[in-house]
Image (tube, rainbow, N blue to C red):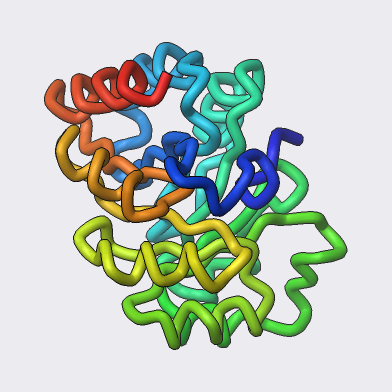
Length: 206
């Protein structure tokens, strides 16, 4: 098992020391595999979030973990809805990320996150959602990178780390970092611009 999103970084500093948290969809996974090892080697990459719309192919999962785990990069699975949780290979992943507070609340009681030591994250649109996610057991919360006020307010009042979602440029990364984000998520859609942005952000954060 790899490192944890909630404990890798000191929190509440004047300039938050961010790490990168790339996001990849299962539809793009096969095409992205040849590139994964190279960016997993970046010291600033802490985890990869794989967005799951259907049951994960065991062979693809094995190939993915072979790229990530040698570099101590955590694998976080983001199921489209809570019904997909039952199909997850929980002993081969490091955590789950739910797309909304509603889906986090819908996680079955049989899914014992704490017992399995899985990190749990939740995408939130408001500070109230984030507070409620924490009450539901989330280890970190995520806000859109454009919600700089929410990121700043959260960093001042809460202990849970915050992810700035969908950073699209160096400028937005700089703004999110100044706002107090602990992690910067970048969507990887298989085009060269995404990988170039990831490399740029790695240099910026190193």
